Each structure stands twice: as C-alpha cells, then as structure tokens.
View 1: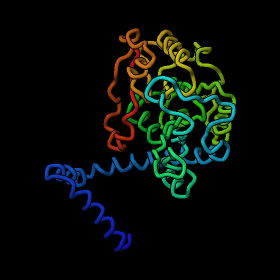
View 2: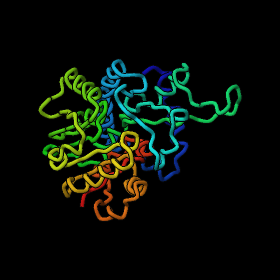
View 3: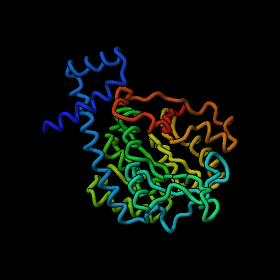
View 4: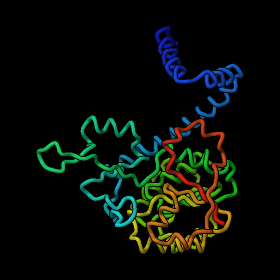
Length: 311
C-alpha cells in the first residue's frame, strides 16, 4: 500500500472510531489485538468470492431477458389487497434486485435509464417518487438466508423455491449452502428455460439442482419431501383467491419441522387474505440458526426476511 493509500485508510478508520464510545472502542481494540479478526476477515472474503458467482450469473441473465426482467409470457398484475395494492403501471417500476443492486440502480438513474419520480401533472413540478418493486431477492438477502437464517448443515435436506422465476434463490442455495437437493418450481416456461440455461452454462451439478415447470399445487410430492421452502411475495402473480388456496395447500402438505422463509411477515400476508385465525398454530417464529454470522451483513437490508418452523 502506498503512503497516500495508508493515510486514506487511517482516515476512514478514524472516522469510524470517532463514532464509538470508550467501551465500544475497547471491544474493537480487543478484537484486533487478539487476532480473532483474521478469522472473520477470511469468512468475509469467502462470502465475497462466492458472491462473484451470483454476480456473473446476473450479468449473463441481463443479456437474455428484458430490462425489467419480466418475460412477455408472464402475467404480472398488481394486487388488489394488501400493502402493495396501491401499485399500478404508472407509479411502479420493476427493478430486479438480483440483477441490479442499489449501486447499479443509482448508476442507471444517473445515466437516465431509470427515473426516481413520475409527473402527476405534465409540465409541472408536481412529481411523486416511483415505487420500485422486485420479484427476486438481492444477492445480500440470499447470503443472509443461507449464512444466517437457516442451519449451516443442509447436506441431507431439500430446499424448494416456490415461483423460482429467473432462479436467484436456487443459485444462492447452490453456492451458499451444502443443501443436498435444490428445486425451483415455476409455472412460466420462458423463466424455466432461463434457469436451465444458467444451470448448464455454469456447469452446476444437475443431480443437486433442478427446475420443474409446474404449478406448485400440482406437485404435492415435491412439497411434502422438502425441508426448506422459500416463498417470495406472490401477490403479483396470483389473485387473492388463488393465493389463499395456496396457503391452505401449504398448510396441508408441508411436513412438520420444515422451515419456511418469506420476505414478508406471515401474519401480515394471512391478515390481507383474511385467514389469519385458521393458521394461528401452524407456524412458530424462529431465531436465526447462525446468529454469529450477522456481523457480515447490514441487518437493515435483510430486515424483511422471516424464518418460521412448521408445527
């Protein structure tokens, strides 16, 4: 490191240290002098190296799907109930978090490919901020699921992603866990073709990772044999009646002891569907299984992820 580079590093560290009180600073000093930071640093670098695989996959997918990552054959409709019922084609922009992280979005805004606001009255300054919606999970969220929320050892377990679309979750499971079987189930054939293409292009083990083109409610066998079920918000893909029926289906067929990971509080989802009382004793909220790894993540960025166990 050059002298100027070292000075810059010292400046950044001092800026951080200046925000700590004496007790916090003492803890940091002990962490550094005990050399235990080296183990943490090795783990952080391992995570960053693994994330590069997802970054490469994301860049490949960008070249083969539309910019908004919505396939022409998909029927994505804003929900009529719940916290996203105010979304519509005018005020909502779909930006896939797996393909474009916050830094990339900011760059797209700067070059004019994305906008932050829309006009309420043409030729006026009466503008409103656009709502950005993603139908995928970010790379950060995927790491958090498999390195913090779920148990470390999934070697003999089956992970199922319901509505796998472009495959973000199954790629995350492949690189960030030792799950024995990873299945993405997706109704849209175009999306399945993208996933198959990525799996083959990146030489993933076809005995370990697979995609099924089907409605999940037609594959009871897959649901009953899964130990971890990951469910992204379904509101944009099914109407409220189908959504309700899907949860009845899951309640009936997901085996006891299985984990369910959602990117929305389940109570909120069930309240929106007006069925919360029928599911009161079905799930238990779980603490993260690898809590010690939270140090590697910005917890605020992962606050919308929830882990449940089936009773």
